[in-house]
Length: 151
Image (tube, rainbow, N blue to C red; front, side):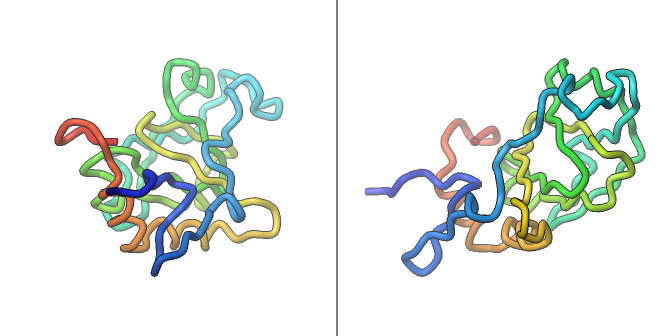
């Protein structure tokens, strides 16, 4: 009988769980109108799923107005880690550390989980944790849904 589903918050490793909630908040992004006084018309980085590399990293020169976040995009900020939610992007390791984001905030696909390191914790740890083969295997094993669109 399978155990509880794997989420971005926990990973099974040699019989134990590493609870990422000790180190990061999951999907912590504020609503676009709460973005610390940044104008809704301000252009922010835009990262579509296609711009995130398999195995980690990203490249995108696109921008969108911050207000577009209300149109169904995922809002994140400089230093966050984004990881794909669905297959096959998750299994292929589509994850990115946004330490090189050109703007304070950014928008991306709704098919990203956002992880933000808690104070005192390094976002590079979160990034490397999300790239670990054990996380990818555990996450893939717990996905549900139809083939090609499992989440």
